[in-house]
Image (cartoon, rainbow, N blue to C red; front, side):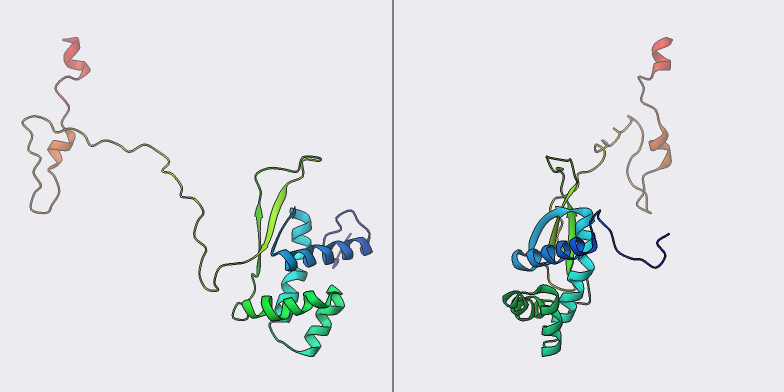
Length: 175
């Protein structure tokens, strides 16, 4: 049993997992958006969010801690000067994972886009497309001759007009 063992194994050794997470996070910070698989993105997301939280406070200690993980001086500078400043007023949720509709060609693996959140803190993103109505619009029933359809004092039509049947119903055709 794996009691108190957190994290995803991803069918790799511990050193391979560490290198994979480091490479994914480096690519994410460099490009702002990457395409990968869902398990890999979910495995690397907590480390990326932790580094962004670390970069919100610009200090030598935090820079050294980020450099110990990333091992790239120019990327650490970008993390502290651009990314950390961008999310300074945001508490968590710096990255988002979105599924892609097409799977990978070689092994049919599900792919996702893992990206840095680009909308302003405190606002929701606009939907990319509008949903269409589920059903067709129903037409209003036609008024029956001789029935009064004018609204009453309360503003509603009389009940007798709504229940009246049209004169050419099936019962009248049989007779």
